[in-house]
Image: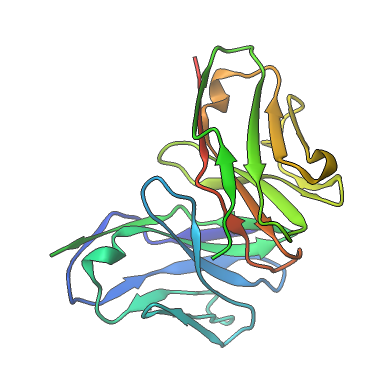
Length: 110
Length: 114
């Protein structure tokens, strides 16, 4: 079946450093890929989605490229801020549902 | 952005009782979903719902679970009877259309079954 695997957390970084959260997926379909962010006490919020292979999505300084050949969709940010502390989820759409990665907790130290 | 509301935020009940979780989806959305997240574990799909019918459900959506949205009011998840393993946070989501549309999530209902 479809699956998503992402970097295990927690990931602790200092403010101003760069971030990469790895995400790889398995599916026999042609998925749309998503990154969601979840803050404590809230539901997941869409960060961005990328429906097409070899295209890039971006929002709030975060970006990810849908790499169909490598079946990857890694999340990157050049310079993280303390407000980026949250849990980040990679997900793919399949049969009208989202298949989720396990989530990566990001902790940013000031 | 669009808001999905969930009521209540917390619910504590005894095993074997019935519970109804309520979701107020985004007003013009047509597709509705429930997801389950056990503390520290992955978010998992339960069911989706469109035009008054369940379209897809996972193996987690046991016979004790049911969903409905009577007359365009709340989209509800009912569990009857509840079991200890039903303790989790339940997230409702809605989307304007199906397929690959982005889903908007509520803040979740934390269900504790004693």
